[in-house]
Length: 303
Image 1 (spheres, rainbow, N blue to C red):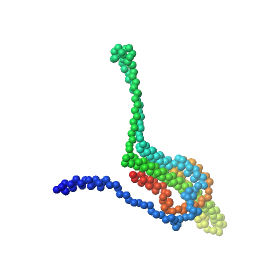
Image 2 (image 1 turned 90 degrees about the vertical axis):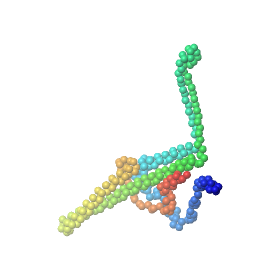
Image 3 (image 1 turned 180 degrees about the vertical axis):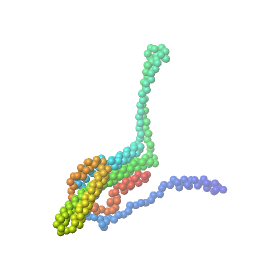
Image 4 (image 1 turned 135 degrees about the vertical axis):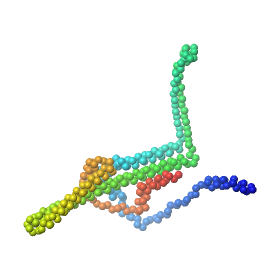
Protein backbone atom coordinates (compact mmCIF):
# COMPACT_ATOMS: atom_id res chain seq x y z
CA UNK A 1 0.00 0.00 0.00
CA UNK A 2 2.85 2.40 0.80
CA UNK A 3 4.49 1.65 -2.54
CA UNK A 4 1.30 2.65 -4.33
CA UNK A 5 1.15 5.93 -2.43
CA UNK A 6 4.81 6.78 -3.02
CA UNK A 7 4.67 6.16 -6.78
CA UNK A 8 2.42 9.18 -7.64
CA UNK A 9 4.58 11.42 -5.44
CA UNK A 10 7.89 10.36 -6.97
CA UNK A 11 6.72 10.48 -10.60
CA UNK A 12 6.51 14.35 -10.86
CA UNK A 13 10.00 14.63 -9.37
CA UNK A 14 11.39 12.22 -11.96
CA UNK A 15 9.71 14.13 -14.79
CA UNK A 16 11.04 17.43 -13.46
CA UNK A 17 14.55 15.99 -13.35
CA UNK A 18 14.21 14.98 -17.01
CA UNK A 19 13.01 18.45 -17.98
CA UNK A 20 15.80 20.25 -16.13
CA UNK A 21 18.55 18.34 -17.91
CA UNK A 22 20.60 20.44 -20.38
CA UNK A 23 20.11 20.00 -24.10
CA UNK A 24 22.34 17.34 -25.62
CA UNK A 25 25.41 18.62 -27.42
CA UNK A 26 25.86 17.42 -30.99
CA UNK A 27 29.47 17.19 -32.05
CA UNK A 28 30.06 18.99 -35.35
CA UNK A 29 33.81 18.87 -35.92
CA UNK A 30 35.27 20.80 -38.84
CA UNK A 31 36.17 18.57 -41.79
CA UNK A 32 39.83 17.82 -42.36
CA UNK A 33 40.84 19.52 -45.59
CA UNK A 34 43.77 18.32 -47.65
CA UNK A 35 46.92 20.46 -47.50
CA UNK A 36 46.84 21.04 -51.27
CA UNK A 37 44.46 20.57 -54.20
CA UNK A 38 45.39 18.80 -57.40
CA UNK A 39 43.74 21.31 -59.76
CA UNK A 40 44.71 24.40 -57.79
CA UNK A 41 45.81 27.16 -60.20
CA UNK A 42 49.25 28.66 -60.07
CA UNK A 43 49.79 32.17 -58.76
CA UNK A 44 50.41 33.56 -62.24
CA UNK A 45 47.17 32.02 -63.51
CA UNK A 46 44.95 33.46 -60.81
CA UNK A 47 42.89 36.54 -61.61
CA UNK A 48 40.33 38.81 -59.99
CA UNK A 49 36.75 39.51 -60.89
CA UNK A 50 37.69 43.15 -61.43
CA UNK A 51 39.61 42.03 -64.52
CA UNK A 52 36.28 41.12 -66.16
CA UNK A 53 34.96 44.67 -65.81
CA UNK A 54 35.64 47.34 -68.47
CA UNK A 55 37.97 49.31 -66.21
CA UNK A 56 39.47 51.40 -69.03
CA UNK A 57 36.11 52.42 -70.53
CA UNK A 58 35.29 56.10 -69.79
CA UNK A 59 31.56 55.32 -69.70
CA UNK A 60 32.14 52.66 -67.05
CA UNK A 61 34.20 55.01 -64.93
CA UNK A 62 31.57 57.76 -65.01
CA UNK A 63 28.46 55.62 -64.58
CA UNK A 64 29.88 53.27 -61.94
CA UNK A 65 31.00 56.20 -59.78
CA UNK A 66 27.57 57.81 -60.15
CA UNK A 67 25.85 54.55 -59.18
CA UNK A 68 28.03 54.11 -56.08
CA UNK A 69 27.42 57.70 -55.01
CA UNK A 70 23.71 58.04 -55.84
CA UNK A 71 22.37 54.55 -56.57
CA UNK A 72 18.89 54.15 -54.96
CA UNK A 73 19.21 50.41 -54.29
CA UNK A 74 22.68 50.79 -52.78
CA UNK A 75 21.49 53.65 -50.57
CA UNK A 76 18.68 51.43 -49.30
CA UNK A 77 21.18 48.67 -48.49
CA UNK A 78 23.41 51.12 -46.60
CA UNK A 79 20.38 52.33 -44.64
CA UNK A 80 19.78 48.75 -43.51
CA UNK A 81 23.36 48.67 -42.19
CA UNK A 82 22.71 51.84 -40.18
CA UNK A 83 19.53 50.28 -38.78
CA UNK A 84 21.40 47.15 -37.75
CA UNK A 85 24.12 49.23 -36.07
CA UNK A 86 21.52 51.17 -34.13
CA UNK A 87 19.97 47.90 -32.98
CA UNK A 88 23.37 46.65 -31.85
CA UNK A 89 24.03 49.83 -29.87
CA UNK A 90 20.65 49.49 -28.18
CA UNK A 91 21.32 45.83 -27.31
CA UNK A 92 24.68 46.81 -25.82
CA UNK A 93 23.16 49.68 -23.85
CA UNK A 94 20.55 47.38 -22.29
CA UNK A 95 23.34 45.45 -20.55
CA UNK A 96 24.61 48.61 -18.83
CA UNK A 97 23.12 50.30 -15.76
CA UNK A 98 20.28 52.68 -16.54
CA UNK A 99 20.64 56.00 -14.73
CA UNK A 100 17.99 58.70 -14.93
CA UNK A 101 17.69 62.16 -13.46
CA UNK A 102 14.83 64.60 -13.12
CA UNK A 103 14.15 68.05 -11.72
CA UNK A 104 11.06 70.17 -11.16
CA UNK A 105 10.23 73.70 -10.05
CA UNK A 106 6.87 74.58 -8.49
CA UNK A 107 5.63 78.12 -7.77
CA UNK A 108 2.49 78.84 -5.71
CA UNK A 109 0.73 82.16 -5.07
CA UNK A 110 -0.68 82.73 -1.57
CA UNK A 111 -3.18 85.26 -0.26
CA UNK A 112 -1.55 86.75 2.89
CA UNK A 113 -4.91 88.03 4.18
CA UNK A 114 -5.93 84.52 5.21
CA UNK A 115 -3.18 84.51 7.86
CA UNK A 116 -4.58 87.51 9.72
CA UNK A 117 -2.27 90.05 11.28
CA UNK A 118 0.91 88.19 10.32
CA UNK A 119 -0.07 88.24 6.71
CA UNK A 120 -0.94 91.94 6.74
CA UNK A 121 2.43 92.83 8.26
CA UNK A 122 4.29 91.07 5.47
CA UNK A 123 5.60 88.07 7.37
CA UNK A 124 3.91 85.68 4.86
CA UNK A 125 5.27 85.90 1.29
CA UNK A 126 2.84 86.16 -1.57
CA UNK A 127 4.72 83.53 -3.69
CA UNK A 128 6.40 80.32 -2.67
CA UNK A 129 8.82 78.46 -4.94
CA UNK A 130 9.91 74.88 -4.32
CA UNK A 131 12.64 72.98 -6.10
CA UNK A 132 13.06 69.23 -6.42
CA UNK A 133 15.49 66.80 -8.01
CA UNK A 134 15.70 63.04 -8.15
CA UNK A 135 18.11 60.46 -9.49
CA UNK A 136 17.05 56.91 -10.40
CA UNK A 137 19.27 53.96 -11.21
CA UNK A 138 18.41 50.50 -12.42
CA UNK A 139 20.38 47.52 -13.66
CA UNK A 140 18.89 44.43 -15.25
CA UNK A 141 21.28 41.67 -14.26
CA UNK A 142 21.93 39.31 -17.14
CA UNK A 143 21.65 36.15 -15.06
CA UNK A 144 20.58 33.74 -17.80
CA UNK A 145 22.50 35.43 -20.65
CA UNK A 146 19.42 36.80 -22.45
CA UNK A 147 20.83 40.31 -22.93
CA UNK A 148 24.20 39.00 -24.07
CA UNK A 149 22.48 36.75 -26.60
CA UNK A 150 20.46 39.69 -27.90
CA UNK A 151 23.63 41.74 -28.33
CA UNK A 152 25.35 38.86 -30.11
CA UNK A 153 22.36 38.50 -32.45
CA UNK A 154 22.34 42.24 -33.15
CA UNK A 155 26.04 42.14 -34.08
CA UNK A 156 25.36 39.22 -36.41
CA UNK A 157 22.60 41.23 -38.08
CA UNK A 158 25.18 43.94 -38.82
CA UNK A 159 27.30 41.34 -40.63
CA UNK A 160 24.24 40.16 -42.55
CA UNK A 161 23.30 43.69 -43.60
CA UNK A 162 26.91 44.40 -44.65
CA UNK A 163 27.02 41.24 -46.76
CA UNK A 164 23.69 42.11 -48.36
CA UNK A 165 24.96 45.61 -49.18
CA UNK A 166 28.08 44.09 -50.72
CA UNK A 167 25.85 41.83 -52.81
CA UNK A 168 23.80 44.79 -53.99
CA UNK A 169 26.99 46.66 -54.89
CA UNK A 170 28.40 43.74 -56.88
CA UNK A 171 25.10 43.14 -58.67
CA UNK A 172 24.79 46.85 -59.48
CA UNK A 173 28.30 47.09 -60.93
CA UNK A 174 27.86 43.85 -62.85
CA UNK A 175 24.62 45.09 -64.45
CA UNK A 176 26.26 48.40 -65.41
CA UNK A 177 29.27 46.61 -66.89
CA UNK A 178 27.01 44.26 -68.87
CA UNK A 179 24.95 47.17 -70.22
CA UNK A 180 28.04 49.12 -71.28
CA UNK A 181 29.51 46.03 -72.93
CA UNK A 182 26.23 45.49 -74.80
CA UNK A 183 26.33 49.13 -75.93
CA UNK A 184 29.88 48.78 -77.27
CA UNK A 185 28.87 45.54 -78.97
CA UNK A 186 25.98 47.36 -80.65
CA UNK A 187 28.43 49.99 -81.90
CA UNK A 188 30.61 47.26 -83.40
CA UNK A 189 27.58 45.59 -84.97
CA UNK A 190 26.38 48.91 -86.39
CA UNK A 191 29.79 49.56 -87.94
CA UNK A 192 29.79 46.10 -89.54
CA UNK A 193 26.22 46.53 -90.86
CA UNK A 194 27.03 49.97 -92.29
CA UNK A 195 30.03 48.47 -94.06
CA UNK A 196 27.79 45.76 -95.51
CA UNK A 197 25.27 48.41 -96.62
CA UNK A 198 27.97 50.45 -98.37
CA UNK A 199 29.25 47.36 -100.12
CA UNK A 200 25.70 46.43 -101.17
CA UNK A 201 25.04 49.92 -102.56
CA UNK A 202 28.30 49.83 -104.53
CA UNK A 203 27.40 46.39 -105.86
CA UNK A 204 23.95 47.66 -106.83
CA UNK A 205 25.49 50.59 -108.72
CA UNK A 206 27.86 48.26 -110.55
CA UNK A 207 25.01 45.89 -111.37
CA UNK A 208 22.98 48.82 -112.71
CA UNK A 209 25.85 49.78 -115.05
CA UNK A 210 26.17 46.19 -116.24
CA UNK A 211 22.40 45.99 -116.70
CA UNK A 212 22.31 49.20 -118.77
CA UNK A 213 25.18 47.90 -120.89
CA UNK A 214 23.23 44.71 -121.55
CA UNK A 215 25.92 42.40 -120.22
CA UNK A 216 24.12 41.28 -117.04
CA UNK A 217 20.51 40.55 -116.08
CA UNK A 218 18.57 42.85 -113.76
CA UNK A 219 18.36 40.20 -111.08
CA UNK A 220 21.83 41.09 -109.77
CA UNK A 221 20.80 44.70 -109.18
CA UNK A 222 17.58 43.66 -107.40
CA UNK A 223 19.48 41.30 -105.11
CA UNK A 224 22.02 44.01 -104.23
CA UNK A 225 19.21 46.50 -103.49
CA UNK A 226 17.53 43.92 -101.23
CA UNK A 227 20.79 43.44 -99.31
CA UNK A 228 21.12 47.21 -98.79
CA UNK A 229 17.49 47.45 -97.61
CA UNK A 230 18.03 44.57 -95.18
CA UNK A 231 21.07 46.35 -93.74
CA UNK A 232 19.03 49.51 -93.21
CA UNK A 233 16.35 47.49 -91.41
CA UNK A 234 18.92 45.92 -89.10
CA UNK A 235 20.37 49.36 -88.30
CA UNK A 236 16.90 50.59 -87.32
CA UNK A 237 16.48 47.59 -85.00
CA UNK A 238 19.69 48.53 -83.19
CA UNK A 239 18.17 51.89 -82.21
CA UNK A 240 15.50 50.15 -80.13
CA UNK A 241 18.22 48.14 -78.38
CA UNK A 242 20.10 51.35 -77.59
CA UNK A 243 16.95 52.90 -76.10
CA UNK A 244 16.47 49.81 -73.91
CA UNK A 245 20.06 49.99 -72.65
CA UNK A 246 19.79 53.71 -71.87
CA UNK A 247 16.62 53.10 -69.87
CA UNK A 248 18.33 50.27 -68.00
CA UNK A 249 21.33 52.43 -67.10
CA UNK A 250 19.03 55.27 -65.98
CA UNK A 251 17.37 52.87 -63.54
CA UNK A 252 20.67 51.47 -62.28
CA UNK A 253 22.56 54.73 -61.83
CA UNK A 254 19.77 57.17 -60.98
CA UNK A 255 21.09 59.57 -63.66
CA UNK A 256 19.01 61.24 -66.36
CA UNK A 257 19.02 59.94 -69.94
CA UNK A 258 21.07 62.87 -71.25
CA UNK A 259 23.91 62.19 -68.79
CA UNK A 260 23.89 58.49 -69.60
CA UNK A 261 23.91 59.17 -73.34
CA UNK A 262 26.78 61.63 -72.96
CA UNK A 263 28.81 59.05 -71.02
CA UNK A 264 28.20 56.39 -73.65
CA UNK A 265 29.17 58.78 -76.44
CA UNK A 266 32.76 58.91 -75.17
CA UNK A 267 35.25 56.93 -77.26
CA UNK A 268 35.80 53.41 -76.01
CA UNK A 269 38.92 51.25 -76.10
CA UNK A 270 39.07 48.14 -78.23
CA UNK A 271 36.98 45.28 -76.91
CA UNK A 272 39.01 42.37 -75.60
CA UNK A 273 37.71 39.33 -73.76
CA UNK A 274 39.42 38.90 -70.39
CA UNK A 275 40.20 35.40 -69.13
CA UNK A 276 37.91 34.01 -66.49
CA UNK A 277 39.36 34.04 -62.97
CA UNK A 278 40.75 30.66 -61.98
CA UNK A 279 39.74 29.75 -58.44
CA UNK A 280 38.39 26.83 -56.50
CA UNK A 281 34.59 26.47 -56.42
CA UNK A 282 34.76 26.30 -52.64
CA UNK A 283 36.54 29.68 -52.48
CA UNK A 284 34.01 31.26 -54.83
CA UNK A 285 31.13 29.84 -52.79
CA UNK A 286 32.55 31.07 -49.49
CA UNK A 287 33.10 34.57 -50.87
CA UNK A 288 29.57 35.00 -52.21
CA UNK A 289 27.78 37.80 -50.34
CA UNK A 290 24.47 35.95 -50.22
CA UNK A 291 26.16 32.95 -48.56
CA UNK A 292 27.83 35.24 -46.02
CA UNK A 293 24.51 36.99 -45.35
CA UNK A 294 22.74 33.65 -44.86
CA UNK A 295 25.43 32.53 -42.41
CA UNK A 296 25.12 35.79 -40.44
CA UNK A 297 21.31 35.52 -40.35
CA UNK A 298 21.61 31.95 -39.08
CA UNK A 299 24.04 33.08 -36.40
CA UNK A 300 21.64 35.82 -35.30
CA UNK A 301 18.86 33.27 -34.67
CA UNK A 302 21.02 30.92 -32.57
CA UNK A 303 21.22 31.97 -28.92
